[in-house]
Length: 257
Ligand SMILES: O=C(O)CCC(=O)C(=O)O
Ligand SMILES: [Fe+2]
Image (cartoon, rainbow, N blue to C red; front, side, top):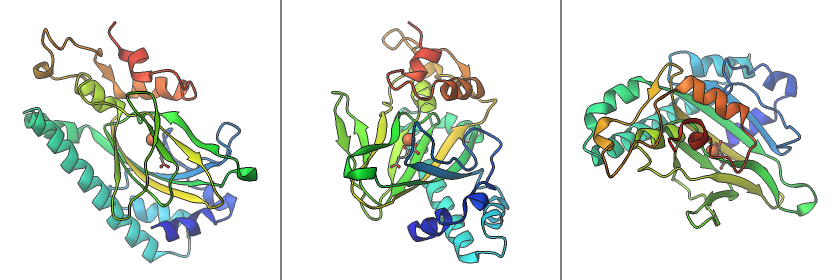
C-alpha cells in the first residue's frame, strides 16, 4: 500500500487535483500555510460499488488494476475491523441492540496522506492537534510521528508496528457513549529526512444521523453530557473551528454544562 501511495503522490499536481469530493473530507488537499508538509487525497464511500475503480480511473486514466485491487481489499479489511470493534464496544455496554442501526447511520471515507520531511532538520508539525469527528478511525502509517495526548496532558509517541492498525474513537462515539469512551487528541510531528505516508479510514455518521446517547447510558450517576445533534451540523461546526487547538469541539458544540 505504501509503495502504491508513493506512486499516487508522485503524480503531477494537475492529476491529483482531479480528485474532487462532495464534502469537506473528500478530494485532494494540497500543502497550505497552516500545514505546509501535509498533502492528502480522499475517496468517499470506498465500500460502495465502483467508487474505488472511479478513484483509480481519475488518477490513472490508462488503468492501474493492481492499485485498484490492493485498495479494494484494504478497504474491506479496514471497514471489517471497524465494525468488529464497534460491535465489541456496544456489547461491552450490553447495547448490541443498537449496533445495526448505528452501522446503518454510517458512511466511510478513506484518506491517503503524505507528509514531507521538515525543512532544515528541525522537528515540525505535520498534522495539527485534533480529534477525529466520526465514530471510529482505522489507520496505518509507515513511520513514527503520530503522538497522542495522554490524560496527564503529555504527548506520547505512537510507534507504527508492522501488521497492526491504530484505532481512534471519534467525537460521535464519545457523545453516543455519554462520555464513557475517551477521545484522544493526536497530532503528527515530522522529524528526519523521509516522506511519511498514512492511509486512514474514517467511519462517520451520515449527514442526517442524529447522535444521541441511548437511555441506558444516562442515569442519575451519569447525567446526559451532550445534547442530541445532527451529524451534519457538528461537521460544519468542526470544520469552521478546525485550527483552534485548545477547543474541545464536541464540548463547545453540544456539551451540557
Ligand atoms: O498520519 C497520522 O498518523 C495521523 C493522521 C490523522 O490523525 C488523521 O488523518 O486524522
Ligand atoms: Fe486524526
